[in-house]
Length: 109
Image (tube, rainbow, N blue to C red):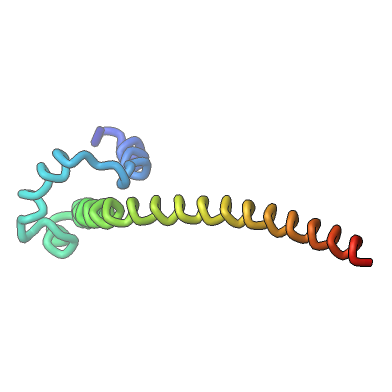
């Protein structure tokens, strides 16, 4: 993989930060706990390693936030869909009431 930097960059770019297995996150914990595993800690060793460490730290933080927010977003999406359906049903009822009121008015006239 490291013999082909372009392929490595493509792999990093295509990584799905939304779906990281829990066992992988658990396996990363010891690495993340190391004092030097950060952008600043790695910068003196290698700029590329510093950016890669920052990427790993940030993608794991992102995943943690995503896993908390996704169920809330899914619930909001379901509520919006239900609200849209109910608004459609309400419009049907309003149209029927308007038609009945129009008929009543015709009969009164």
